[in-house]
Image 1 (cartoon, one colour):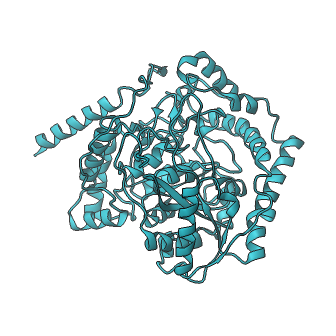
Image 2 (image 1 turned 180 degrees about the vertical axis):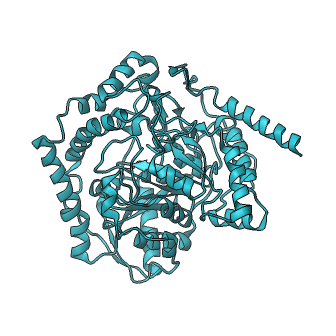
Image 3 (image 1 turned 30 degrees about the horizontal axis):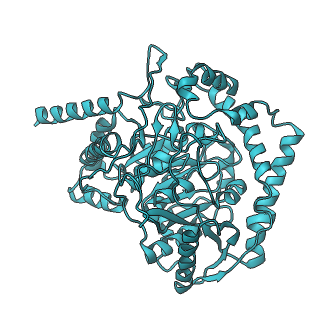
Length: 549
């Protein structure tokens, strides 16, 4: 038996080595930077074999562990084989930037613990993928998709990674992302990074998965893991959740610690769950939420963290809820509008009182101020993160900019770094200009935005279409966003949940529920009731392109 297991592990190790051939590695402290991007080819149709873990939930995994149907190692092996078959081979989703070389060893340890002591939590043994801007002090890299951070050593796990390990979750690897969480260029292509290349949508390989948590969204949608962790500043969890037909939760800023996460903005950044069901997202949020001395924003979460967010999973959760329709976030796509109107009818049928429309006069009036805040904070916050690395060739935003210029053929191949250049030109956070735009953002998104509208209309939540369906990936012109509702909750730092709402020509579309600070429990209840009444989630079929007939 031992020999058979050794051979199996050896074969899987070889599979991982083949998978990672194109990855950047570091030796003797020096980053080796090969050309990672293969020539762009026209997507082809692929037949993907059935997968016995398709759409499996955390609860079903735990039941399997309990009865002996599953082992942690067995589940990990299945997901690793699935990743090998369809992420690099087959359709070539390119969602995973790196696999954990210790995954099977850790799985064995978790199996032993299950037998000896029982489960630590509902996530014990559950394979999780995390975004490549979330630090892990192991043999995995943390690069935000950039070649500039290859070989850099982090001092410790991010708080989110620590919480996952303490819960007994198995960190299977890291996901590709829009490089630097999509804060590099106004003409960027979501899902592309210098280190990882382009991530592709499983619903149409020539379509864009959105970002910046592109790989996390695709991995969950394509059943490459049980759940994943993404990060958001403005839309980076909820937009890829929309494009990939999954559930995404952007928590209130401070509910989940950002320590150890490559930053953009301490005002708006947060990590959050990405899952196929609201129940799984709630279970993951329960693990991620917590107060962390290294992130002062989490101090405000004291008294607001729920012991178990799955207790809000009420199929009757829409009864008596007052929901406000933000029509200003509709009207950009006729098919999305039709799905949204159908959703409103269902919400009413399920017992919700719908106020339609709810007008928020500040929407669209603080976009420039948000951009200013992010640029100010990115320069300062990134320098603080880079300065804490134990080993790195870059310590400031200027160092990153210079690195990109030096490696222009790899990093600036498709788009530039004008956002970084603009951010580098900003002054310190003590400047009057920064303080003014920060105050304006807070006022227009909160008092005159979400809080004001909810107070006036006595609302439990606001609703809107999450965004437009996936657009064709375009490395020449960049992304093609036509509509999105993410900015209001993002700038306010308030919670936002998106749930599948249906399909447009086979492409997923989501509905968003957002509201006051710390209202995650109520939003989960509303979102779960809608999900259970509709069951819009459908796994992808990996076509080369969509059919317009």
